[in-house]
Every structure is written in structure tokens, then in C-alpha cells.
Length: 75
Image (tube, rainbow, N blue to C red; front, top):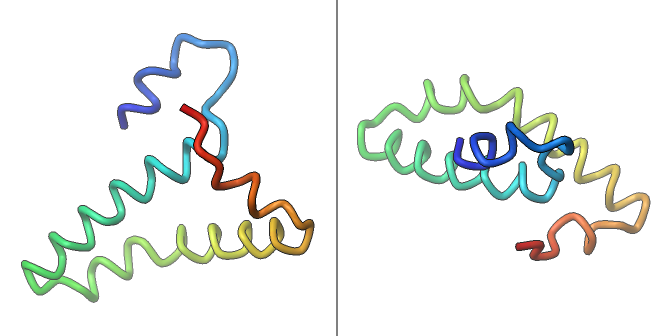
């Protein structure tokens, strides 16, 4: 969420690297929360479509030989 708040007034949208980084921060917190509350099935039902999309995007990056570019630290 903070990524989008900081980027909303800029001409360029967040990079895929930034988007992945922020999304996985939320993902990890949501996953921990689901584990603590015993809501794993609900968690996976919500996150599964995004995980499939991200997995296919990462496979595309691997096939293009650009995985190292997707996860470089751009602060």
C-alpha cells in the first residue's frame, strides 16, 4: 500500500520489482495471520490467483534470462 501511495503522483507507475517487493510484504503478513487464526484455506483461496499469475510471470522472466533483473534492489 505504501508503494502506491508514494507513486500515485508520479508519471511512472511502480516497477515490477517494487510491486513484487511490496506485494510479498503483505503476502507474508497475511500468511502469518492466517496461520495464527487457522484460516489457511481461506488465505489460499484469496491469494491463489495472484500466486499463479506471479509464477507465470517469473517463468517468463527465467525463459528470457532476466530473473536477476527482476529482483535487484532498486531503492
